[in-house]
Image (cartoon, rainbow, N blue to C red; front, side):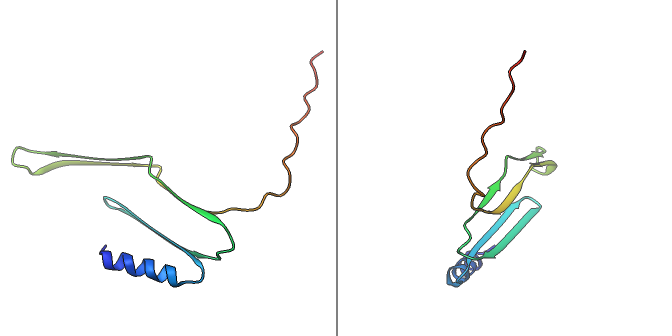
Length: 99
């Protein structure tokens, strides 16, 4: 992806009256893209979690790739609106005494 294409998306998001989030994640052959346009009045959060990404390569004495191992585990992208609380939290349940 070129810097120009990234900048053009960023400028387009800034000009929009709505909230614009753009995520692009590329790890080896995995490509995930998420674009969301939402109302600015709704607070939200965007989270990208990559807990484990391992890429191992083995080469022979002539520097030719002979083995490649890619481990990608539990990659998560979340776009979650924040909702107002429904009310005060409930009190903890009463636990009867043992007899």
